[in-house]
Length: 539
Image (cartoon, rainbow, N blue to C red):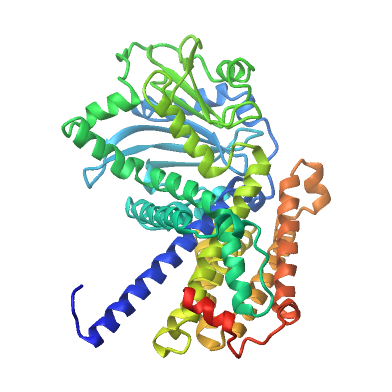
C-alpha cells in the first residue's frame, strides 16, 4: 500500500466518492430513459394523438414513388430508404454515398415526407442526412431515444459513454450476484418497518435481488450495441484481418454482388409488399424498405419486419427489384444464416423486451424502474453514512436533483413538444429542448433551495405528480380529440398513456403528503437504533 499524508488521503477519498456517485447518476439517467424508451413507439404515437388515417405502405404507393424519382438528380437513385414514423407519415430518402468536409463517409440526398392517405408532399429537403431538419411529428420519440442511446453527446462520444456505463452496470451486477450472501432469502424479504433506514435498506435489497439477472442482461446487451460498430468492427479488422477493414466488412456483411448498371424498369413496391405480407414470407407489412440501384438491372429490395406473434426477431427479406422474385431471408451478418446472426438477434430481443409482446415490455419497464430504484437508494444509503460530514452535503443534494430531475426534465420535454406541435410544428425541436432544460433548471433550484432531504423529496414528488397530471390535460386540450374519439379511431394506446399519467401523478401527490411514511414506521428516525448502526456497519 502506498503511504500518503492524511490530508491527501482524504482528498483522494473525496475524489473517489464524487466520481463514483457521478458515474452512478449517469447510469441512472441511461437506465431510466431506457425503461421509458421500451415504449418509445407508443410515446411517439401518443405525442401526435395517434397515426394519421390512411393505408400507408400497404396502399398504392408506386405511382407516387415514380413521380418523386423523376424529380431528383439521378445519382440519388443509388439507394432509397422508406418508412413510416409515429405519426403515420411516409418518409422517403433518395440518396447516395459521398465524403463530407471532414473526409468522413456520409449520405446525401433528398428526403420527402408524405401524407399516408393522400400521398401529398408535406416537406421536401435536400442535403447531407445529418444536416437535414428534424421531422417534427416524430421528434419527441427521437429525443428520448437519443437521451438513452448517447446522452445527447455528439458523434460516437455518446455511444462510448453509454457503453462504458453499461460495462459498469454489468460488473456491478455480476459481482453483486457472486458476493450476495442471502440471494434466495432476499427474494422473499419482507421490508422491516421499525425505522425508515432499515425499511429503505430492505427495499433496496429486495429490488436489487429481483432485478439482478435483468441488470446483467441489460448491461451486457446495451454495452454490446454501444461498442459493436464504434469499437467492435475496428478491433476485429485489426486482430483478425490485419487491419483490413474492407475485408472485415465483406466477411461479416457479405461480399457485394457484381454490379450491373444496365437500365431496367423498377418493378415497384406494391407487388413486393404483397408478397412480403404472405404467411410463408413475413406475414406483415414492412416497417422499413430499402431499395438499392433503382432503375438498374441489379436493383434489390430489402423489406424489414417487426416481431410477430410467431417470431420474436426482426426479419429482413430480399427481392429482385426488376422481376419482384423473392430471394429469401437476408441475415444480419453474411449471406447465410449462422449462430452469430441468431445470437445478435437474441441480444436485441433481450435488451428491448420484444419476446412476449406487450406483457414482456411491461415487465421490462418495471424491472428497468426497479434498477433505477436500486441505483438511487444505494447512493442515498451510502450518503446517509456521511450525513454529518459537511463536505458531502452538496453531493447528497445532487443525488436528489438527478434522481427526481430526470423524470421532471423528460416530462418537461413532452410538455414543450405538445404545446408547440399543436400551434407551430416547426418549433417542436426548440421547445422540446427548452422544456427539458427548464425541467433541469427547476430541479436544481429545488435541490439548492431546500436543505432538508425530506422536504426536497416531498417537493420533487409534488412537482412530478402535478406535471404528469398536467401532461394528460395538455394532451387532451392540444390534440383537439376527446378520449371517445381516440378510441373510435383505434388509438387506445393514446388513451391508455393519458390514464397512466393521471394515475402516476395522483400516486406521487399522495406519497408527497407523508401519510404512508408516518403510518409505516414504528420508531422515529432521529435516534439511531442498534439495528440502524448494524446497517451502517454493513455499509
